[in-house]
Image (cartoon, rainbow, N blue to C red; front, side, top):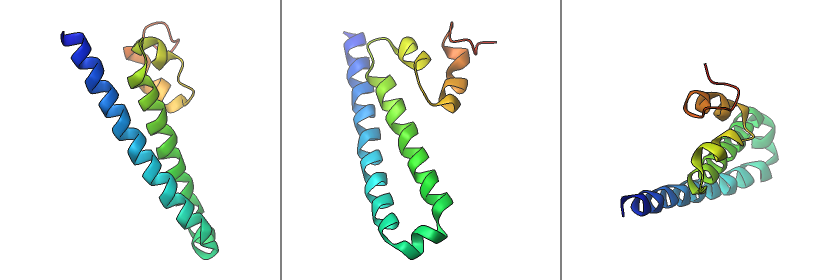
Length: 94
């Protein structure tokens, strides 16, 4: 069935996002352990954390049984705003 294949592909994409998120977390951990780099790159380290959070949120949406509902429940405001037009009823639709 096409729907089952679509769901499988979405799960595989979510797995890829999780794998990249794990690599970002490990990289961030290594950089945070270096006190000199930590002090110099705090903004960049926060950006890595933000990227990881966004990827994790997108992976959760991709795995959800109800994609529009999962998108409406997303806690990251920037993603919720972008999905607003695609997710009727979330209060951000035009």
